[in-house]
Length: 95
Image 1: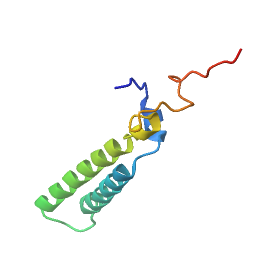
Image 2: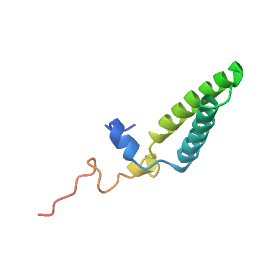
Image 3: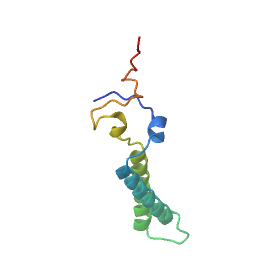
């Protein structure tokens, strides 16, 4: 496996694969539902508030982890090729 030195900012800014975009959106939905339950203006049972807190926490973690996923196709691992603009593929100089 190649050593890709990606920091957190470059991972978040990199394109996210389709599956992880779906998972990220699911996490955002769970967070929204949990936040609505926790911040409800009416008195809710303790079990519902606890469930809302767990949904909020779980959705936030799912969204954050899935956002940091990057596609291996960008780095040529699937096709076995090294991209032309990669530092591992030096441009040959013609003499």
